[in-house]
Length: 439
Image (cartoon, rainbow, N blue to C red; front, top):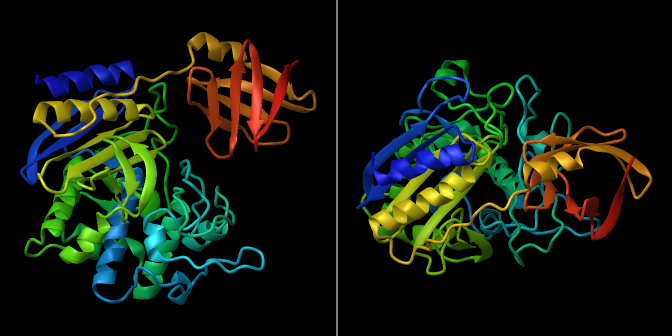
């Protein structure tokens, strides 16, 4: 067993993640593949290189590649108002003001649009159509996509913006997104194990990794469905995602037969604006991909319910890696795996320090379970959800609050947090703080 496999196997147990699959890229080609752990924590089937995982938000830069191919053909303009080409839907006015949003802004998360991400739909739930997602209409479980920041002024991650781009591609070509991206990206790159298909067809269930929560328990129904295809809907393997990274390296180098012209490929890997820090020191956004300070390394993370993954590559050295896991806490496994790969393969300038999760203790979480009143008024109950909380306000459906520190919890779907403070529970929302009175 090599050191990378040994470390990943140990981290799977440490972080309650059942399985992982990975690829290392050297010299612009797949150099090493590896797997560890189980497809399903309740079974005995081992993860293999052919096991399918949800790519989650790594779906986005691949969708941007499809968009850029249409720009290359002159069908789209990166800096044109998207409402000029949208037919089925329009970016709505914000009050009396009609914002102008461009494809460049959509691809760099700077369009000022709402809807950060998508929670997915449990097995048996009705799935919304794209227009229902954009308008926030039932059975959609997220709000409508709207502009509430001045476009082009700052980074704010918006899965909703990616769905605007998806609708634009369909409107311009008259082709369903799943078919279009297969023709523009998946088939040309040889990604035969990849498909933007939601829900996953029954014929592929036996090949798919089961999603697991932060305690390592399988999700009910095995996984969530994500009809938000361009933002979160790709099922794939690390080997197929490595073909994306290698393809981008070839595009940037101007290789014969590359999917994009060198000019547009270089635009894709040019800093558009700063965007915080992600695995591997990716602190800027290009078009679709996050970039490091030099613009040399590019990549993207992904996190759907029960899946965590990351792709990162170097545009010049031909190096890179992809790691995919089937657990909510897989992000810790992924981060540590990339540091191990970077160290083993001598990635120059890669930040080798990794974060250590600072999560609430079992005792802290258990002590918060109970019935409360918010500021002595609104009744709610708190139940344990792994290292997080399930909170039910009077008259509302339960909300999940994820652990974000040793004492803090953040809602999955609202801008709301709780804090455990000296034996008390404190509620934060919109800059307002309330004590939670235990009943």
